[in-house]
Length: 479
Image 1 (cartoon, rainbow, N blue to C red):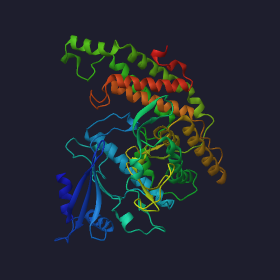
Image 2 (tube, helix red, strand yellow):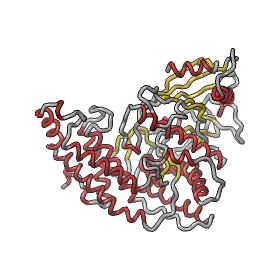
Image 3 (tube, rainbow, N blue to C red):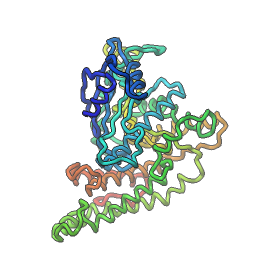
Image 4 (tube, one colour):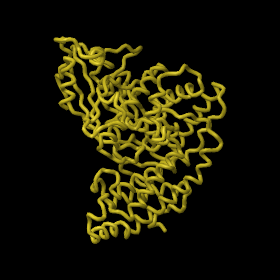
């Protein structure tokens, strides 16, 4: 934090007020700043450019509100929520997230969308590749434009119609327990859209966020638009092999998790060397896991699930879908969006249960990736939809829109395929996360969640897979 303060001081920028904002994995602050006349010439082009960008964010009181983000962990859906606090891993996530912000901004500008993303004003590691991080380097941090209720975006509007910040009203109406598709009982999940709003919300997100981004990247893939500056960003957002995340690469990632679980059965749980621990301690730890019949069964069935995914991969691969990879956000829930309404929230008429506000801004691109577009689609279904009927409706809606786009542009078949293979892949991915947590391989600590709760969650995932036709996944207590 001292380095951040010195950075602002070097630009003759005073921090008038700073407030910490709750963030699950990182540090985040909203800072009100004002620029002072420089006593000497600014050092470098970067400082001059940043002063200019800050001035562009000014409100009427000649101050600007900015967002300061300091990355602290590296957990992502793509790495099975495994947390590392090494500078290289944290920087890797930060660089990917920043790349997501920049890519999304370029795309949304290109399609003249009313939806925006916060502007990146400064990134501490902009010229330091993640592969060259050093343990002595500080955590990566960045400055973004602010788009809350008191921001320049809502305060000094240049839109065709007045936009009012919804003041978090929609996000506050989310529920903590509701039915999830694939589950027979109400399921505790933090921050879910209510059942009656889930489908209209998901379709609105498709129309206002997902499809405009995908359409533009389809145009780009088929050389229907001029080339842009996305290529270096695409490389950063691709997987560790420099390729787009796809169905097959996710299977391979799950296989790596399975291999880690096999190794675990013959090595110490916490990674300590065998020579540093007594044989009695090792036997006790291993017996605690290996003698647990339920967990052993779940590990074995997880292995079979991966084998079954590989057998069924043919359905996803053939015939060729001609679906090009796209930029995916992968967490388009209300808490990661800013909304606007046409009437002030304090004076709006009574809304119905199905009213969904308009999307103003997309936040939190830490899951940003260059991937098969169906990853965005399946995660929208899983995180938003309340039942299988809603998920299927979302899937079919996307199928029809993509088919219409392909027909209008003379493109051959862009077959999205069925939802079921992707539901299975996502369920196996969830099992991988849960199994890693039972073995304390996720980096979150042994007390992140008790084993009984984790085992119950895995049983629910196996029940989902059983419903999707994998009878071998029927939970152990049902046999």
